[in-house]
Image (spheres, rainbow, N blue to C red):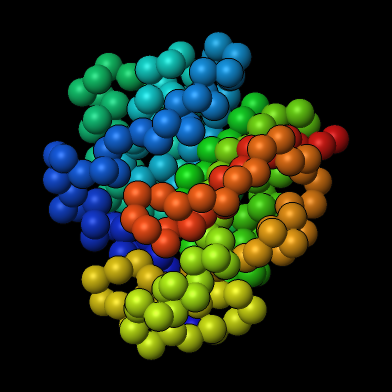
Length: 221
């Protein structure tokens, strides 16, 4: 089974997104992080979707590159940027094959993104992020917590672990039919070699039981 297929779900979702969708509203954590970044900093929004964060970061005066594997999302983002008169860069491709030079970015954002795959995809993605992020740059991200796994296994249909920590569920209308990676605190810290933890919290998102790790990491030399 291919592990990096969640963009297929999101490509269809972005094609039919409504004007009141939550996926158009920036997260407060992202806005707080952006407030502390230096003006004009080069920021990669990895898994940018339809641009809820990329557009907000560009409005804040940052040099933004939005990258995603879902073509419908990137197209919607480009239209929104043009309509708003915002200048940002876009790229279409898989998260584990970033087409950027070493040290291209001062900061990286990956909100609800890099856990969409198995451990090989995840580790390759983390290695690519570390490569394109300059030493001393920060990385804001979320990961799925194992505190959520037992809830999803009870709530969703036909849970199957396809490889270590990577789970799929028989849910046709959800991206959970594609592989998702869950981890506990020990496993989480082991994944991010070459980074220092600046902030770490495990908390629910908008739905009860939707536990995610929230991290800000600093890329070490």
